[in-house]
Length: 483
Image (cartoon, rainbow, N blue to C red):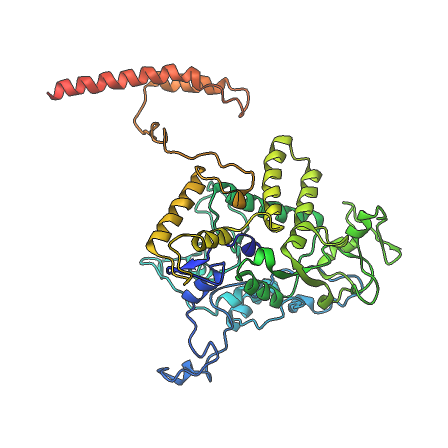
């Protein structure tokens, strides 16, 4: 979804493409599967082992969309929980997933849960691509992670789960568990990049705070990835997306009995916290049972839990049962009581993303394509000549620096011009300063009442002038001595 909304790559190798995103091209460029791993016989294989008889089928490049979820929620009321500690609940993992069996068994014996063990064992079906001199046998796997990262960092998936790196000493900063969101494409301006980066963080917080369930089968995620490559898919395409973000309130699968969601009841002002006519008990934090078990809500038939939606419907809402991601993010900001200054900037970001989602603003890919097709030198043959490429780069540079405003791309957002004027006047000097200057600086900082008290530069300017005069005199004296 986000790759389609940020699509920026309609040109490769001097040709205008019929696609808008770069993911598939990169996936093919680093695809190191053997013919046998692709399901084909290789007549040139040096050993029969490398042919289909000895090689498993690997269905994806090492640069591709994710192949498995690593968390699928707790089991819901009344569902069988027996044996869950020893198997993976593959409700949504509905595509073939190759694993390294030895790695999987080792992880399970070490106490890693089945879903995460499956994900990690899937990474280890690949061979390492890089090795560094002095970092092979010299690496202590008990305290360092270089060998793991040589596999982890060369599995380029749309989302990457990253464990904390080891700390070299007790005082080193602690870096926690992380998830990389990797599918978005770079934009032409800092404003656009900031808008989408902030939106992803806010959406993640919204999902956690509101206990939202966005799961759809992995096969539909793969289908969305293919659709996102299509020309102008953000405006004209449809994507699979989950209908039931909140736990079921009434109904079973949305068809046999009318589905009623928490959002629908909220829209008509009739939410009483009931489930199929029964009160839904809440825990000490005020969270209902249905919310706690949302990822596998009882009665939810997964084939009916999602549908095809346009980008506008996904982002802005559909009917009264699907609120849309942007309204949910706004609700989260209202919930946390974001300050007015932050809200002013965040609303600018959200308004911009909403206008692109509904088609009022075009993606960078569409703008680039239109630029090429309207260029006087374009011959309608998909060939992007040197002259067209040069003019395109100049235009992109001017847009990024704020000297060219393109309303169809940014709307009424004006990019503040970026210049190099004065950028290099203040050097990051490491030359020692006098004791007097150090004391003056420390005295000034100890007088600050808060971290926001930054109105002190004028007081220091006179000291800087004195230092400059001192440096000048020193340099003059040294020159005289040298002569």
